[in-house]
Length: 128
Image (cartoon, rainbow, N blue to C red; front, side, top):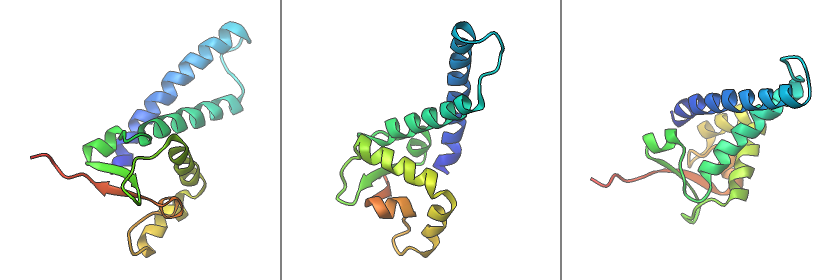
């Protein structure tokens, strides 16, 4: 459910960064309104990676995670480093469907990237 919330914010980032890069590209490089598709794919990948790595590292949560009171920690309960957050993003990108199907068969209900990296998503206890 957290992902559903987050995808709207990520899509907004795609539009924002796409608009800025297209404007700079048109101003500096070309006379047309289109840039090569690899640049568009790079914008999508970098903005998505930046969003998740920033919010997953150092104990920060994405908006969706905050709404559903989820938190990502390592198996000892510590916060994720930027390196661990980036590794988690890469594994999610590479193992998308397989990584999520892994939850069905795992005793601890961990997805495959979290199992490999020794991470877990926990439900925060409410303050009230």
